[in-house]
Length: 406
Image 1 (cartoon, rainbow, N blue to C red):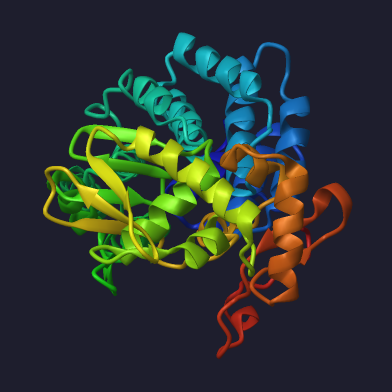
Image 2: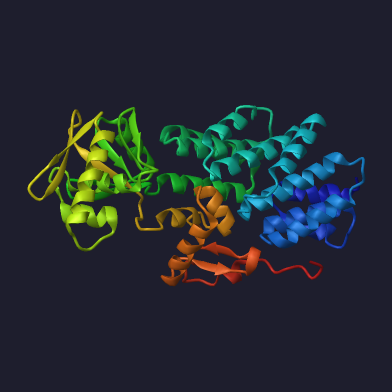
């Protein structure tokens, strides 16, 4: 490998994509194409980066399996950032196995981290933990240790373990000082900001306030009866009743929880559960049936009693009933929560992450777009969705100018 390729690779490892491009921008051999693809990815030109990496993978000879595997890993990272969650995972797994067999433990670990991150995005936390358990970050360089700790923090956040997440980010912060890569430092800083941001709202006694993750963890560990609108369950301590597949029952449980210690009127319950703005005998009869079903589901820790105006929820052992809701509520809050990461998502990726149909996601996006809450760019299969950018400064002035050769 010649000196220019080595120098370009070192520049990329140090987070200097422009420095790397200066050395290989005019070359079309396989190693240069791969390095140019990585540099363009770091600069944010993902379509160009993807094309260059594909060209590099084709240009490497039949005996350069490690180089081709590295290109596949880089393509997988671009797909993850682009939220192309249907990208062929088997190709990444095969590339990771090749790298492990040939002794490239750094890139093999990076491939594993990409697999874990994808699993976290689609909600497979237990599987992500199993993949991560097979990696020992100790012998890895600082940049890889940062990636490891960020994944550890991501799993801890989804497990609602705020202390473990914060400890992982502190370790990542120490490792990023050794790595000296600005982009990684920014990612760690962003993770800290997300950990300190409002994670949920608690509604109790007619009042509400926002909670950070540590406070959510404390609430769920308490003896309070929690109607969890984030996960569509009702819980008290370790006892959990899932109503995720019974939306009418959960709507009733949330209405009763928000009304506690008072009662929720029949008119309000019918409106929340059935979406009807008027009440007749058929609605009242249906309400009695659904309340009976909810009473049976919540029997382990609460009773539901009829009152003159409606129904009231009474916990058996807990001293209070609270409702835990997302920071921003609404009909399509789940879609907005995924788009809140600042990345552009396809409808297929959102459907996969949310466990619903692509058509359902498309209808939600269309309604949000009418209200100006999301915006689309691209057409057909290349269409992506994201939340509107923050206005007030010209972001294009902050972007590097494209090189004439690219």
